[in-house]
Every structure is written in structure tokens, then in C-alpha cells.
Image (cartoon, rainbow, N blue to C red; front, side, top):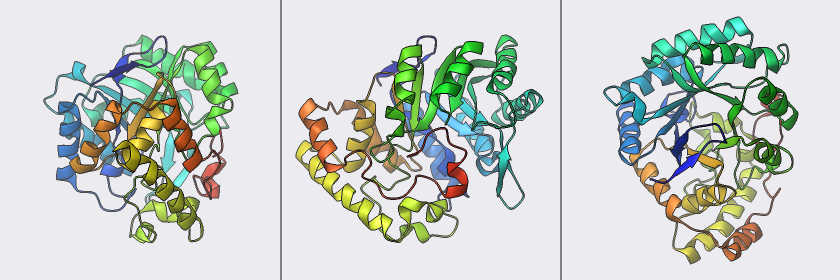
Length: 332
């Protein structure tokens, strides 16, 4: 497994990380617990060291699942990246973000208990809390770093100005943000800022929630419990156009002897050594398909062909429903 370093001050991690949100019910439809745990085991056995979760994924279920999957493993053999702060109700509805210093300490205490560990490697607010200055949130995380409960500070889905403000309080290790062939807004200001400040990126949504995996078909988003049915890019009229982009990408992948998913992952990885793609593989089969993407070296000509197939801004539909777009530091 190749490794990459998250920023100038961060840790070395596997060049591919595993996102676990889809392993719990309530995100992408029903999940298979046994297969999810087997997939985490397979990832660790393949050398994946970065495991990403969130305390609000299925209201804590995901952290408990990850803890079960990691039980018995050497704690120094993997890194836990945890997002916090998203508020949810008993009907699984979202209710904003709480990044107050006292909330930081509270959320962290619960995550440490659910995950069965004495420290979180990278701790990050899931979104910006408009009622709390980022300096206060980062200051609270810094206190937890000084106390040994957290190793590194991360951010998620914030703009360049917020990154600078946070970094002035304590060095930011990485920004977690959506980045894919269909979501390239980070290229304008955010990515240059990360490079200037020496901050890494963990890129989620590299397959656009399965839309550009090469396995998606129109209508699949209508499964019960699958939040993708609410996504504008999966809406009737948009999804057909977006799947047309996938077919163009499939022709490029065929010429290179790889799958569409492998090509999409490799494209993200090729955008910079400071970028670590996160794959939300829910099965060992999907993980096995994703891993060879790390061995795919894209030439300038290959990148040009990919750009022709899926130009920047070619996707139709926002990456989130309108109610969630307002919480993002950057757009599509």
C-alpha cells in the first residue's frame, strides 16, 4: 500500500482511505452488518490505515460498528478520522450544527466511548456552525489535543477564508471535502489555499455517491432508505445526462484497461500528492475494485481525454438538496 502525508504536520496514511457511512442503515439503503465488518477487515489487511466515520452516522451506530470491526487490531495500525457536531432528531432528521466548545468536549467523550479508544487521530466539525466562531471550535479541539484525547485537527466542507482562520489558531492537518470529476468547485480557491498552507485533503464522494461508479442505473435511487433519491444529480432529467458522462468516461477507461470507478478514483489521486481519496465501499467486492486504482498512472494525455469526457461543470444538479447546500463552504 502506498502512503501519502496529510499536510506538512500531519501523519502518513494509506493513499486510499475507507469511508464507512454507507455501512449503517439510513444512508444508502439497507446495510449488511457482517459484510460491512468483513469489508473493514479486508481494507486493513490490504494496508488501508485511514478509517473515516462520524458520530451522527446512524446516530452512533456507525461508530459502534467500526469499533466492532477494529476490535483486536493494533491501535497504532490505523487512524480514526471522526466528524462531529451534526444534530439529529429521533426521526433521523438533521437539525443544524453545534460547534460550541462545551459541545466539542461532549461529542468527543461519546465518540471515545463508542469507538472503544482513548484517542481520536483526526477530529473535525462536520460543518461550520454559523453561531460559533471557528476560532472557538478550534480552540476547544486544541485543548483536547493538548490533553491527549485527539492527535490532529481536521476541517470539513469549509471555504478558504475559514481554513485560514482555523489554521491561525492551530495547524490544520487536512480538509475533508467532496472532490470528484463531477464536483470541482474546490479547484478555484480551496485547493490553492491548502497547498499554500501545507494542509492535506481527504476527498470524499470521489464516485459521486456511486453515480460515476460505472454500476449505477437510472431508477436505482428510488430504493427505500436511500438518501440518494433526494439528490438533485439523481433526479429525473439530471441522472440521464450524468450517466451519459459516465458512458463517455467508460470509453476512456476501456482504452486504459480499467473500470470507470478505478479511473474516477485515480483521477482524484492524480490531482496532487496531498490528496487522499476516500472510498465508501460497502462490500469486499467494491473494495477489491477500488484498490487497483492506486496502481493506475495517468499521463497528461490520459488526463486530457478524461477532461474531454467529463469537462469541469458538466454535471447537472447540485451535489446536495437545497437545504444542505447552504451549509457548504463551496458549491458544486
